[in-house]
Length: 635
Image (tube, rainbow, N blue to C red; front, side, top):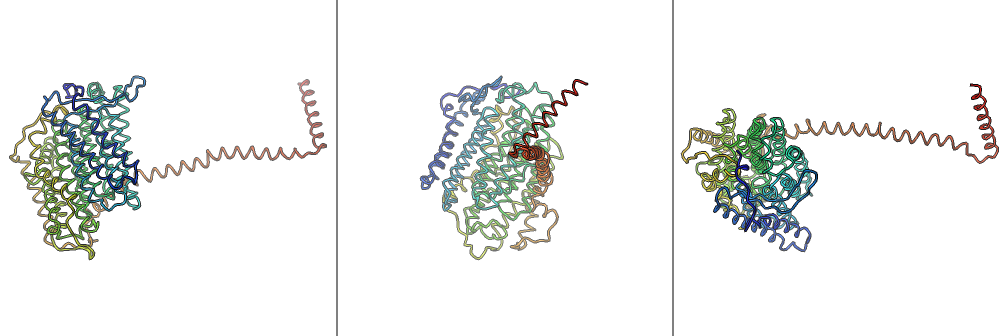
């Protein structure tokens, strides 16, 4: 029995009846800032920052209430209104506050609030700051709709809202051609993924007559293996688009053209985690299809290695972190695809990743702030002493992501590697290799940025960021240190009502696989030290590099593959359709029009105004009629 069958949702009462305010407040604030325009320039950023803080406080109250309730009383549904009713469908708008959704709400509003505070300093001199904060609020509201929806159709509204907001934020500096192109690319590629989610929802409506989570869980066991697999694959396609998983990953690195707080918001706490949420939320479907579940595992495994590969080859600090995000989301997808043994660990790593990756993205923004927006790590070096707060908080994120004992990632990622070996030795070895490569490229980033000799440009004078930027870094740095330990012994029990997965015993003592992971991580660190710590880093990337590095620098030729397989064929088809339209359709229409016009031109010659011509035509007509009558009698 799945948990959605055994845990009956209860109707929202008390503080849960106010859950709609989680979404309404940031959404209304976004509308106010956009409608008031320049009138709100002086204070709009403060209103926008207060919105997610309010939502976070309310989320903490809801979470505390759930903590005090019995496990079977932690799934609460709030029905808001009927959306539409047609035929056999009756679709309502409602919210589901359960152990899974509340963790996402806390992450979105908590980390989102810190990113808003950080943005006050980061965007202080941008003339469009008020609009930027409005888009941030819109993003947070859409993401909250996505994770709080009680059915897939309402989830899809949030899903598309996140897509719109990400487009607006990635292309925020649209006067830059690269930013405009990056926003368009993210928007288009996500629409490809959204087609998969749309097909999944259509299939659910056709099969179950409903898209409500509880109805899907109740009727899913009646699916044939084929339909369970198809719906699972459709959901996976949607997840690949939002979470930048292979083969829909190419938009993610280009998204770095947006302001750095956007990178932190999209890559750490919100958009890229939506795919993981979708898979875990849809576990009732995936558990019915071994093919669909294994497809999730394969996609996650390939992506964790692909993202790590890209991270090794980039000199742009934000793109190294973007490749890292691909890789870490790959770990989460891998865990989610494993099934009940991995659901909690996927969400566990998602939460710890929210801390340390937001920490490092905002830290990268602090470095850029100090280096005149230069993102090239070859122009950094020796920044640890001049940016001490940024350095120590970034170092906490670094130790967390490589899985240093005691830090956040040590607990969450090691559980995934253990579960991967339980699924398949090859998958486990790939996950283990990914841990070593992660240690390599993150150590490379640390050495090139914080240590060694100064490689600064002449007009650069590094300085620490203001308090509005460093305070969020400190808080996220603390989360990077203690977040894993705080969740390690608790999260499986907490998520059981939402995932149905029975908790597995965990221990602070390292297992043999855990020890092997630490050894592989140590090898990655040592190799990075040999290559970048003992040698002077050239301020220009060497041209004579290995083919492996060339492939990584070119994002594994993702754009080339997309152009060859999708863009070029589509363009050829479109050009031939246009040609057929011009020659056949337009030819037939224009040809018939020309024929009628030509005939009319010939007949016009008869209408010359001459009485004798008209009399001759009438006589000829009379003779012709007479001949027809005579011949008709003979026949």
